[in-house]
Length: 216
Picture 1 (cartoon, rainbow, N blue to C red):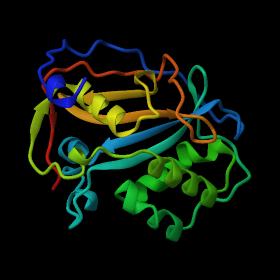
Picture 2 (cartoon, rainbow, N blue to C red; picture 1 turned 90 degrees about the horizontal axis):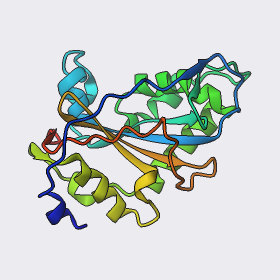
Picture 3 (cartoon, one colour; picture 1 turned 45 degrees about the vertical axis):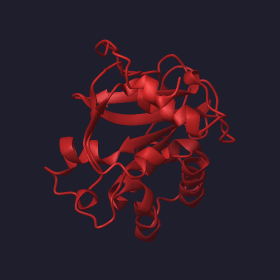
C-alpha cells in the first residue's frame, strides 16, 4: 500500500501490553539478536527533553530519527546492566556518538544498560550501533518534516518498508506515547541483517491520528 492510500486508513486505539521481562546483571555476550531503536526526537523533546532543557532540543541541527540504542535481545526478554570485563567508554567516545544519539549522556546510558551486555568493547559497541543505524534508510519524508502532522501510525511503518526493501512487517514495530509517534524499532541479527522480531518486542501503535511534531 502506498503512503497516499495509507493516509486514509483509520485504525483503533493502542491495546495494552505487559512490560517485557528483563534480566539484570547477566553475563555479557549471551543474547539472541539486536533491536535497533530509532527515536523521533521532536516527540521526545515535547514529552521529556524540553522540561530537562536538553541541548538536543535546542540544537541548531534539526534532529529527526535519532539512535535511541542498539539493544541485545533474547528470544524472550532481554539482558541489561550485565557484568563485563570491558572498560567503560571515555567522554570523548560518548561525545562522538552525539551526532546520532542527540547527547553524550544517552550514549553513556545505552552503554551502561545495553552495551555492556554485548560483550563488545565500548568502541566496538558504538561502531556496531553506528553501522546498524546506517544500515537503515530513513524515509526522505521524515528527513525534512518541519511542521506538525497527524497520520496513522501504520503510515510510518509503511514508509520504512518502502524505503528499505529488505524489511518486512514482522521486522518493524512503531510505538506511540501519549498520542505521539515515539519510536521505530527494527530487529536485526548479530550480523546486522533484518530478522523477524520476537513477540515481546512488538508494540505496534494503532492510532489513526498519531501526532508527529515537526523537526526544529
